[in-house]
Image 1 (cartoon, one colour):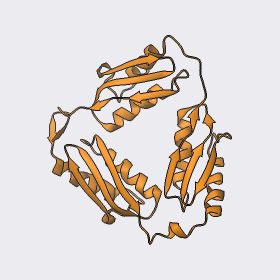
Image 2 (cartoon, rainbow, N blue to C red):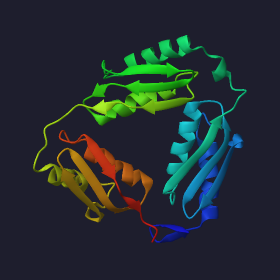
Image 3 (tube, rainbow, N blue to C red):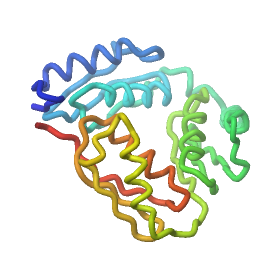
Length: 225
């Protein structure tokens, strides 16, 4: 079983709430998705109509309290209309999707292998890499995204870990005292325990915001008591 705060949450409770969150989330056909939970690990199975629906289902599961891991066994159903979209159409729309980003990184390139998109190139910030993937996953016809975009090389700084710790301390969403930060050159490692997956993402994003970081090793765990 898992816990949130002082309230114990059973796998059955988590399973019901994940199912409810899937049903609540726009763009997801919850009826086609199976949910199994064991010790806070959620396994999603079944068929969906698109890669975007698959990604949305995984994000929905992570939003539920008590979930610390999600195993994605979802597949795009063979009868989905996405399979009828041509590679040429996918390529055109992927290019448009990237170009429409507010801070469109002109170094990003997309390779189409049937219905799979491989992103490559170099950007300055991690959020640009994330935005590119999120934009592409919405393109009709895409069934998988392989994000190989890298960050530009940066100068390291002696106080990188300390500055990230200060950023964590400023966040109202985190218990910064429970998180340890170490830096080795441009690589940062986060260790410790947080209360939820959303807190883990907040901490990770704070580390990525450093102008001296090109890699973040997130070794944070989600507390179970």
